[in-house]
Length: 410
Image (cartoon, rainbow, N blue to C red; front, side):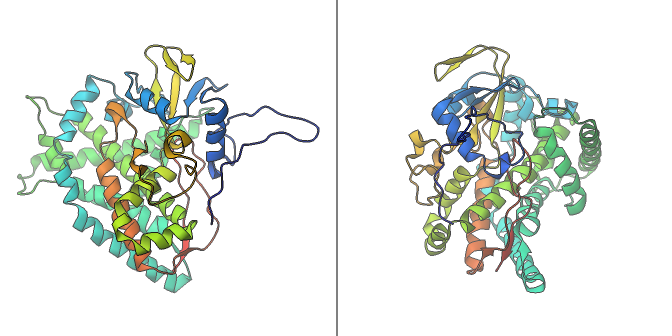
């Protein structure tokens, strides 16, 4: 499918003209949020929403916001202690301390060493896709590849059993804990709390077993985290559990949707799909362009600690501000008039902000890039007749964007 220009949204009729309303909670918004972002960039790049939060949409303003010393205070559906102890929801100096400890084991060498494992897991997933297509006439890229791959990689890194069904059920519930809501849903809050408790109990039991076990010759990531030290500083059990839960959520919700979004984007752009098949040298740049084109994390939240100026407006201290990562990735001032198009040869694709920025830049960025590069390149070259088998239905979430399923024929 050819690229569609992000035409201005119109709300006018012959009889009336209604003002544009940016409503990310509206039914259907997640089907294609990009025209809404484009409208804000053109008309109101620093937008104050009636619900009481702000949205920043232009690349330069988003980067400046992410680099500023504001808070990442947890303002999600639930306010659990695990969220509070997660590196993702902490400010300096606590964030600095946790990140320093995690960085000691989340090294570039360790990530690059996962390439053979990722390649094997991808090939096994492609075998399942081929078998499912042979038996049923189609296969689902989400259930066969995008979901299991990042989960299996994280479980292997942590040295934990990959209990597919159990982990997916709880991870899907916990993904809602990352979402802001217009009105709290008590049933959802209870489900999140239950899922979190069950996951915490499982992680705690694994940590306890690893503490009592003899030291392995090649310790897994979790064992290294247990032993991680910085000047005598170590992670407490609660902090350790919180970081492992964060890794599960990041590995499930973020990378799964990045992979699924990438497949959808390529199958909707047959010219770029053909280009990638013909040009293996584009694999790395293609991964970044796919990350830019349709990122799975649409926003990164900040709470202003001081007044913040952007695009001629002053956001007051204490405001909830959403840094529009997905909008910034389509900013014409950075990516040119083709910003709304998928172009795997784009020379500045890596200027995307899909992994955030500033002190909270995603610790797993290198791993996500590696998984996407290997998975996408092997998928498109294994199946030369790969095509979408049905329309795409998107999850009704605001922060996280991804398809419910990606049905394909091969």
